[in-house]
Length: 169
Image (cartoon, rainbow, N blue to C red; front, side, top):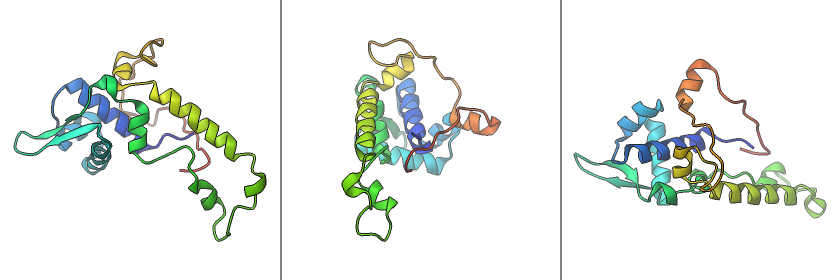
């Protein structure tokens, strides 16, 4: 599995908006999370379309969570970024120019990818922004270590978790 930058940024921006409990501009979000303004604008736009973030225009406008942190799941945020562990177009991309995948009738991997997506979806649907802020895996689960660094900090220092690539991006 590979968590894309836009997915991580989406989760981080939702957490930031929940912590601030008010409206923040693209510039403020960019400065506080160490993410470029164009990237923040792109990610916030996707979160708005998903209904997780609301926008208010005007001089004192900005972005805020549209729902309570307890009602926004990690799965919802990741879905808003339009990246999926498995989707049906994956098989089409693996056989470019062919009418169908050569393994279509005997594929033993497709059920594995679908089951993995289902398990991950259920797991991530059980974790809310409020859980992440509190350091919990889920509403009733054990506490997780609370991360205080940002993606930008890890990129500047070259530290951070190793990334594992999945079957597609």
